[in-house]
Image 1 (cartoon, one colour):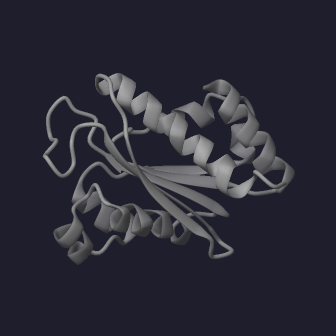
Image 2 (image 1 turned 45 degrees about the horizontal axis):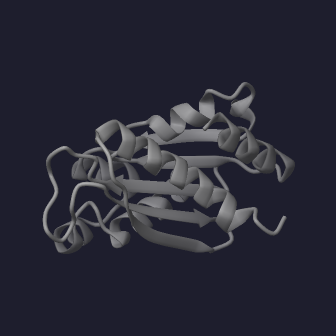
Length: 160
C-alpha cells in the first residue's frame, strides 16, 4: 500500500496540489497510509475522521436531511463529504469514504462490506461509486482504503 501512497504523493507534488480526506469506516487509516510517506506534508493537507453523523454535519456540512433520507453509507452522503472537505481545507483534491466494515451493522440493502466513495477537485469534477468488499473488519478497511487511493489516481492522474 505504500506504493500507491508514494505514487499518489509524487503525482500531487508534481502538480503542486494537496489532498485532504474525510473518513468514516476507515477511521483515519487512509490519512495514516499517506502520512507514512516521508515528505507527505508537502502534499497532504488534512484528514477528517467523521465517524458519527454529527461529525459529518459539524465538520463537513453534510445535510441532516441527506443523512435522514439516505443514511451515512450512501453516495449522497459521501458526495457531500467530499465537497465539505474542499470547503474546509487547502486541498485541490478530496476523497471521502463511508461504509460498513462489520462484523455487525449490515442490512439486506447495505450488507457488511458496503463502502461508498467520492472524489472531487476544485475544478468541479466529482466521481462516486459503491463497492462491496468481503473479509473481516480489518480486511474490509484495508481494501477500502486502497481502493480510495487508487480512485484518486484513476480519476485525476490517469491521463497525466
